[in-house]
Image (cartoon, rainbow, N blue to C red):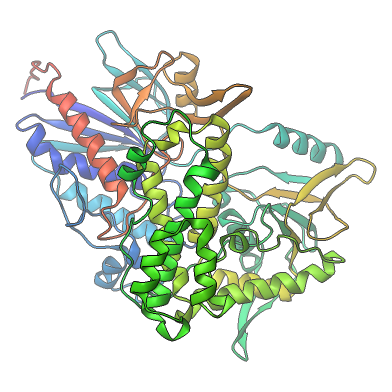
Length: 619
């Protein structure tokens, strides 16, 4: 009996499970007749891993529709490996019969998603090909080294002997990050004055027990992390919601802190849209296609984001928006789509407002990207108290737009924004931007706008936020939020640019996911030995280190300090430079995660097929 080749996957969450699926799907074609053992290392149960584990609050929800989540390839996926269909989350729930409330257009809890992912993992293992073993190690990987000859050694927290592997894939998901200078400053101040400071962290793992009833807590950040903290510190402490006259109301339990929240933009992420397109989908991409961009700027050494890219990006977003407005709501425009589209295609972006003014009579039906991105721009209120009703009205208006199909052009814009992002990642033009522009404009502003408009919470979460604000449990600090230690008063002081004045607080929460270099010991070891590097961008007087593990853009192999891609080490996920990634796939969208997983699996199996393998085991 031949000794099996060994692949170790560090991380058994959705990404590790997806790579396992592709290994099992491709092994018969690329490694026929050779025994293979896949070993997964994760202290949390396989399938869900840390983020999607079953042991977390039922108040933690997904922010994607159950019908838009699948772990299985379908006919839309353009990859070299075989297609192996399977149920989406909502289809699995319907067949399972125990989650009757999980429908295609509903948002499941992370616990339900955990059960789906566990089922997927068990299903894959049960259906594995003959000659393939799957082993799970419920522990952490603490190091990765190499023997002479290329054999990989994965060191584990619970044993002295390492796992020996022919190839390693790092799929560790979201990581804790080293504290920033601001974290260190705020934590030190909190320690000196008996305050509470929670640096950025994965929310479900954060200890929120120290926040006292009625205590003023500042939350810096208005995205997904804020929503989780909001739920845990309110309903999670015993508060409840009721519906009165068609409106959601919050019934305090008396154990809630008072949450003062602000951010750069000053408003919460846009709620998830609760309807489908009314008209036919716009043909995308139209003005912003990767191949066209590469040809257009082929002769340029350097391009400018605002002058060269943004006008095309904005025109593409407008195309998606107005296509839906004209084809689905023709009574609200002054001409037919064909006429509008011909003029729209001919004009540069800066001339589009004139065309829109002539053909779209209602201002509320016109796309204003600046107003969408900066809803508090140019607004100043006499006091923080007078800011509150304006923000509550903003949230209520957004809920109406995201819940009523008469506003379906917003969904057209959403589709176009996602298309723009895909094409931008696929194009080579970002390599012609300055390092400063790449960091600030693409990875900074654009990524923030994308998440704000397309990756917000379920509408019910923003209804809850509105109810909490009306109950006085949540209060708004507005845009341009700032937080400073006040050593004389021994408190945190916070305010923003939307209103004068400030509030005093005894606790501060950095309500955002960690960013920067990971604290993971395995990755640290690679960095220290020069076997891995941070992604660094620099030109002129600008230098920026993202803290992300640099990997090959072609096949996701780990790159060392000399720029060499390691032949037997792969890495993918939010801790790497693969910025175009997704944890889950939407069915029938040729999802990028499936294509990435297939590339890794087929490249890995190709390497294993060339690995000398002659040793026999005594049976």
